Length: 277
Image (cartoon, rainbow, N blue to C red; front, side, top):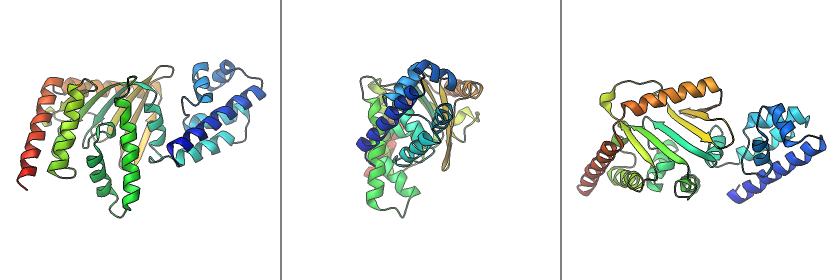
């Protein structure tokens, strides 16, 4: 399903929500109270400015007694996404986030990946995939990254473990291009980036990536991801603990200036290596 047809699908989902809410004689405020959500969030669902998570679709079915309609349609739209099922909702949330903070222990975060790096990473994980499938996934990743170039882009802060710089995904030339891309984004002040050095030792949740997202009209969320699985968390206590863990990463990381210098040095090392092979 193309991005355009997906958008049409979510617009239909939103219009049906409005029709069935009004048919039940409920205002946006009244439905919001039943879902423990703001009327602004309901409005954004109905206008397709915000896409619901599956658990919210289930709650809407219960509140409006719609016999699973919104859950089934939500599942279909999420399954048609180019992203893994556990990440599809996260990809939609980042489009409306006002602030994104990420920690990555081993690989470059998706929003910072070049096409070459992403392609090499995908081929390593899907060695039998057809070229067309790989290229579709690469395009989806590059489309996501466009939010960092928009005038309304979210504030983006990433802490990368030094291992991210040392794992040569795609070989020296690809890594040189990737690190130069990250450095350029940092120099243009489109992102704030820090490196957690090997010397920092062990810190909490280092085995998984961690993403924190904040929104204008909704509570913050945390997302953790491991191999072939991810968890989108919105329990306030869990989100708070995740934010505290991220604060520890930032405190132990190198300064943005020192981090940029390390990235540029690693890029030069890869360039020299690429020129000799």
